[in-house]
Length: 335
Ligand SMILES: [Zn+2]
Image (cartoon, rainbow, N blue to C red; front, top):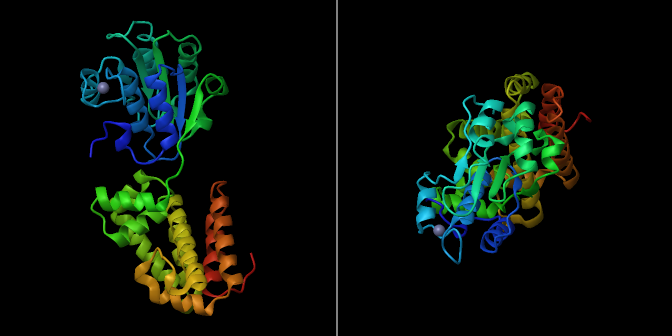
């Protein structure tokens, strides 16, 4: 479904309210950092804001139907400029100069604003950021620059200090799940699993839904957790060794363990009333809930979360994963 107005965009109500109000009452600032997790719709929000600032309708901007909105939707609005870059992970100083600095002093083609959107703005190197700085410090009255990023800490402090900072928030799992069912033809069960892994991001959930690897890896980890009690240690080490070569893979394993143990905890607390992520594994979850006490469940959840935290600081992942998996199979080693 094409998103042509704020009402088509799911979630992020405060940001939408702010953008709509700023457009309606002509109160937009000159520079924004729009941050938040990957897949949370930041680029779409930036585009809608740009459209709203240029929209010719009196109410409910962007209307999606006026001449300006139609040009924006087709990607041909001369005053709505989205920067592009050639190298996959770098926005160069030349690209900033050619696509922004050199043109920002040229008045808008139509009456009104001129909007620059910089997606992946954290990919600007320091020289590119410094080149941009002057345009942000002394922008022409009509200019609005929106820096979109998953990683705002890569932007230099002088840019931060001159921008208004807006950040998307994670959506509730239910919202993500409903979205997958309604808009991506997902079944109830797979929607629920993808939403649980997505951390509140529709984009992430959508990627999981489309990914064969995700399903395969999930199946393998689930199988390991279920059989862990009867597995020889060397098989656990082999799994851990293979998994540790890939950071994203480890993260998915840890999330799987967390979600399975949350299901176990939920079942232990609420019995059949529990709404489980892994509905297909109810039998395993029920028996595990019966034989495991609250302390033990809490301990696995805590150590998994701890290892997830350590993953960010590049510790020896494999050692951590070895111990965690051994503890799941039989709680004997203290961490
Ligand atoms: Zn319009």
